[in-house]
Image 1 (spheres, one colour):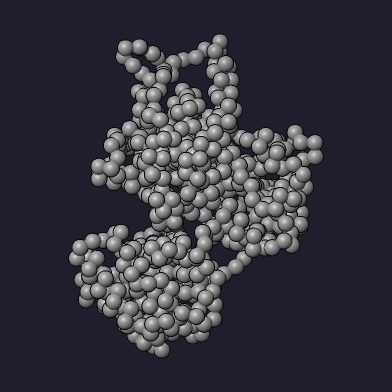
Image 2 (tube, helix red, strand yellow):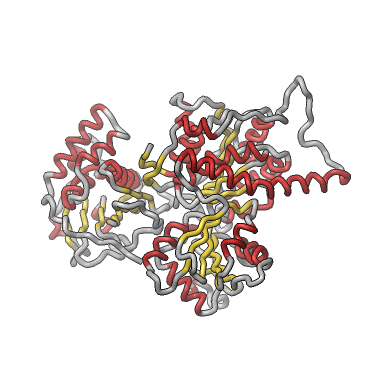
Length: 191
Length: 390
């Protein structure tokens, strides 16, 4: 079982990102589970969502405390207490940032990859919503699911030009990160 | 068809497959997405039904009551304060024996204000005279919703389908949505013999003098006791049609010869089950998941607890000043056994506190340390208490 935690701010499509990733897992023939961390969400407030992906039905419903991977939609969240909690040493952290990984602080000991997801989304979608680009980069890094599964998940929500632009964004974002860099990281948190 | 759906969306679609003629609800977290999804199905023309927007939960329940009295299949949903604002009407719906279905997206009750999950709301109305069924996952929520209409209409009793708020309602997971033909084969159109009909005038809800009140109460109690068999039948027939077991009155998993069992209800079941399997054979225990809380399945529970030495009851609510609600009822039911197991009782996960996989070893350690022999809150953090209470 792969457990992933997604951090973002209210309004960035954090829960949607989690739902899309779990739906993509389903589209690829796996089981997926996604849920928000149930805060009283407000625009701009730090929020988190959890995703689990497995070949078998997923029965546990607790929050993800020791994620194999972290997706961070706003680099400033690295300074928010709790964001890096439970992350094992060497875990993959994908951060929406225009800076190089080496320029970021507080993430020593983790395998950090950055992607200028907001800029990419602004260019291609015309909206500064980083979630799709980050998911595409995450799938490229891990090889966990084919990009086509993510496109299929998006196709359940969007059609026409919006879907076409998202598909273009996926191709662009996936090409910006080293493919398969995290393919050997497999971490299933047991009891 | 197998789909990845948010719990609320799946529940709304299950309700839609049952073709309610009237849906009336007032939004409250975490029930909101259920009603939003139903509203969308109506707006998109996928569900033909009268969607009545009201100004409060009191009205929502009243509209549903009136709709059933007029012979329509009706549905409503709420949570927490909404359930409590409905409380008076809930007793009336049950006392008038109006068969309708309500989803309770379980949430803590104020004060202090909490929007998060526990089961205090449905437990607070356990004596309203409704059937109460608790769901462990969203597949069970879908299947139980469909069974609920059948059970309600067959017993002429309302059914509350209890679904943990957020933990189920806001979780997207893979589940099997029934085909419309499957539901049609299982659930005949609603024909209410006592419906209000101008050609056969009838009064509903009149004053009942002491001469008849006792007998009315007796019949209501008897109807709930008789519902036990109908709940089992409905589950078995749905199993034949869908191939899925949603747990009848209660279900069990784990080694049959275990001398320790944990009894719980709702969405903790999956986490516990996984934790218990992973824990290996060191301390064998089995799991009992209570699905029917009203009617209380005394006999099924006694059968399940034969030969047990310890039974640990884990629940997500409490009766302040008394202790566990489910625990007390379990103790009472098991007292009829020749050699009842020793019952330990804990509340856990109140007001949305996360219930992690470590719950299982922690629970066993707590029992070994003598906690829970009366009642304890398992995940209490004493460091957060004021000095005089610690």
